Amino acid sequence: MAYLTDRKRAIGLGSAKSGTEHHWNMIVSSVALAILVPLFIFTFGPMLGEPHDQVVAYFAKPFPAIVAALTIAVGFMHFKNGVQVLIEDYVQGMMREVLIIATICLSYAAAGTGLFAIARIAL
Image (cartoon, rainbow, N blue to C red; front, side, top):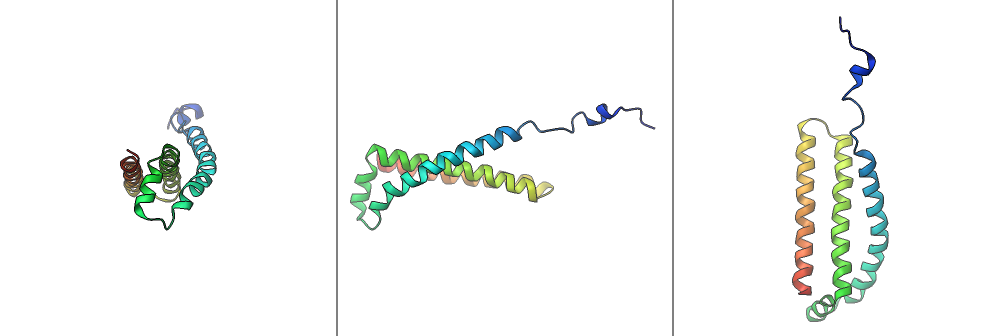
Protein backbone atom coordinates (compact mmCIF):
# COMPACT_ATOMS: atom_id res chain seq x y z
CA MET A 1 0.00 0.00 0.00
CA ALA A 2 1.47 3.34 -1.10
CA TYR A 3 1.01 6.39 1.04
CA LEU A 4 1.68 8.89 -1.71
CA THR A 5 -0.57 11.83 -2.39
CA ASP A 6 -1.72 12.65 -5.91
CA ARG A 7 0.65 15.61 -5.98
CA LYS A 8 3.62 13.48 -4.96
CA ARG A 9 2.83 10.93 -7.70
CA ALA A 10 2.58 13.71 -10.30
CA ILE A 11 5.93 15.38 -9.51
CA GLY A 12 8.31 14.79 -12.36
CA LEU A 13 5.59 13.68 -14.77
CA GLY A 14 4.53 17.11 -15.98
CA SER A 15 5.51 19.32 -18.86
CA ALA A 16 8.99 19.06 -20.32
CA LYS A 17 9.14 22.88 -20.09
CA SER A 18 10.38 23.20 -23.66
CA GLY A 19 7.25 22.94 -25.80
CA THR A 20 6.49 26.65 -25.82
CA GLU A 21 10.04 27.61 -26.71
CA HIS A 22 10.15 25.01 -29.47
CA HIS A 23 6.81 26.20 -30.87
CA TRP A 24 7.95 29.82 -30.76
CA ASN A 25 11.19 28.90 -32.61
CA MET A 26 9.14 27.18 -35.31
CA ILE A 27 6.88 30.22 -35.70
CA VAL A 28 9.83 32.62 -35.93
CA SER A 29 11.65 30.45 -38.47
CA SER A 30 8.45 30.08 -40.50
CA VAL A 31 8.03 33.85 -40.71
CA ALA A 32 11.70 34.25 -41.58
CA LEU A 33 11.37 31.65 -44.35
CA ALA A 34 8.20 33.34 -45.65
CA ILE A 35 10.37 36.42 -46.24
CA LEU A 36 13.61 34.70 -47.27
CA VAL A 37 12.28 32.20 -49.81
CA PRO A 38 10.77 34.82 -52.16
CA LEU A 39 13.93 36.91 -51.79
CA PHE A 40 16.01 33.84 -52.62
CA ILE A 41 13.85 33.05 -55.66
CA PHE A 42 14.16 36.61 -56.97
CA THR A 43 17.92 36.71 -56.41
CA PHE A 44 18.64 33.18 -57.63
CA GLY A 45 16.14 33.07 -60.49
CA PRO A 46 17.95 35.41 -62.90
CA MET A 47 21.07 33.26 -62.64
CA LEU A 48 19.42 30.02 -63.80
CA GLY A 49 20.98 28.88 -67.05
CA GLU A 50 23.78 31.45 -66.93
CA PRO A 51 27.43 30.46 -67.35
CA HIS A 52 29.40 29.50 -64.26
CA ASP A 53 31.55 32.65 -64.33
CA GLN A 54 28.49 34.92 -64.25
CA VAL A 55 26.91 32.99 -61.39
CA VAL A 56 30.11 33.13 -59.34
CA ALA A 57 30.46 36.88 -60.01
CA TYR A 58 26.81 37.44 -59.06
CA PHE A 59 27.05 35.54 -55.78
CA ALA A 60 30.31 37.32 -54.94
CA LYS A 61 28.12 40.39 -54.31
CA PRO A 62 27.01 40.76 -50.68
CA PHE A 63 23.21 40.83 -51.04
CA PRO A 64 22.71 37.59 -53.01
CA ALA A 65 25.28 35.77 -50.87
CA ILE A 66 23.67 36.91 -47.61
CA VAL A 67 20.16 36.00 -48.81
CA ALA A 68 21.33 32.56 -49.93
CA ALA A 69 23.24 31.93 -46.68
CA LEU A 70 20.32 33.01 -44.49
CA THR A 71 17.91 30.88 -46.49
CA ILE A 72 20.15 27.84 -46.12
CA ALA A 73 20.75 28.37 -42.39
CA VAL A 74 17.16 29.13 -41.41
CA GLY A 75 15.76 26.47 -43.75
CA PHE A 76 17.85 23.65 -42.33
CA MET A 77 17.25 24.70 -38.73
CA HIS A 78 13.49 24.76 -39.44
CA PHE A 79 13.84 21.32 -41.05
CA LYS A 80 15.73 20.00 -38.00
CA ASN A 81 13.08 21.22 -35.55
CA GLY A 82 10.18 19.98 -37.66
CA VAL A 83 11.60 16.51 -38.21
CA GLN A 84 12.45 16.26 -34.51
CA VAL A 85 8.80 16.88 -33.61
CA LEU A 86 7.68 14.36 -36.21
CA ILE A 87 10.04 11.71 -34.83
CA GLU A 88 9.04 12.43 -31.23
CA ASP A 89 5.37 12.01 -32.15
CA TYR A 90 5.58 8.81 -34.20
CA VAL A 91 8.66 6.80 -33.18
CA GLN A 92 9.11 4.97 -29.89
CA GLY A 93 12.02 3.53 -27.93
CA MET A 94 15.70 3.68 -28.77
CA MET A 95 14.99 4.26 -32.45
CA ARG A 96 13.61 7.69 -31.50
CA GLU A 97 16.94 8.85 -30.10
CA VAL A 98 18.89 7.35 -32.99
CA LEU A 99 16.72 9.06 -35.60
CA ILE A 100 16.77 12.41 -33.80
CA ILE A 101 20.56 12.35 -33.57
CA ALA A 102 20.86 11.28 -37.22
CA THR A 103 18.55 14.02 -38.50
CA ILE A 104 20.28 16.67 -36.39
CA CYS A 105 23.66 15.57 -37.77
CA LEU A 106 22.28 15.52 -41.32
CA SER A 107 20.78 18.97 -40.91
CA TYR A 108 23.95 20.52 -39.53
CA ALA A 109 26.07 18.80 -42.19
CA ALA A 110 23.86 20.03 -45.02
CA ALA A 111 23.70 23.57 -43.59
CA GLY A 112 27.45 23.63 -43.08
CA THR A 113 28.09 22.39 -46.60
CA GLY A 114 25.77 25.00 -48.09
CA LEU A 115 27.27 27.82 -46.03
CA PHE A 116 30.77 26.69 -46.94
CA ALA A 117 29.86 26.74 -50.63
CA ILE A 118 28.39 30.23 -50.36
CA ALA A 119 31.41 31.48 -48.39
CA ARG A 120 33.78 29.96 -50.92
CA ILE A 121 32.00 31.72 -53.77
CA ALA A 122 31.57 35.03 -51.93
CA LEU A 123 35.10 35.34 -50.59
